[in-house]
Length: 145
Image 1 (cartoon, rainbow, N blue to C red):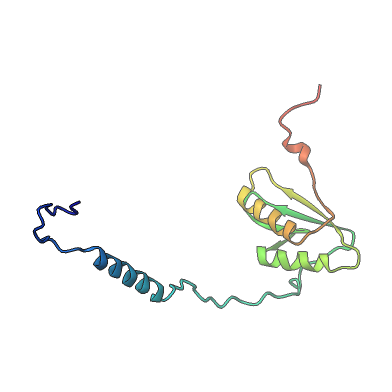
Image 2 (tube, rainbow, N blue to C red; image 1 turned 90 degrees about the vertical axis):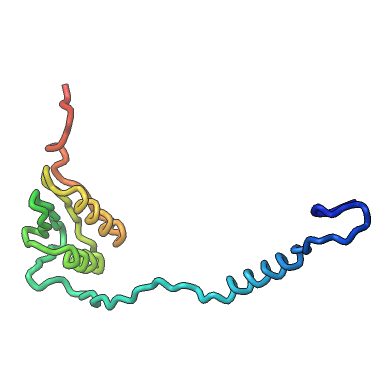
């Protein structure tokens, strides 16, 4: 039986058998792939260490605190403006109290949904248990009859 175009008449085959060469090439390719160093795309960033104390002008009430998000995307803690990082620090301080105070969240009608979602995420991650929304009736889409 003839292979790769050879003749059955007994004459020598004139084509070179490339099967062993392909096997060697595949082994070399696998060796090169294994020896390539792993690409490391990590970027090192020096982040500031968080301050565990709430800002000095923030008053934490022992029974009930109010968190507002204004339409101008300003975060207010009992009427005092805060940044998101200051709010997280303040929330940690309330969580560390002996009796966790109630947190009332009241976003205004045209406040940013994205910022409200981030605030909710921070509250959820800190596992605050006494949390509630206030004045939801202002946003009702139906009326009782």
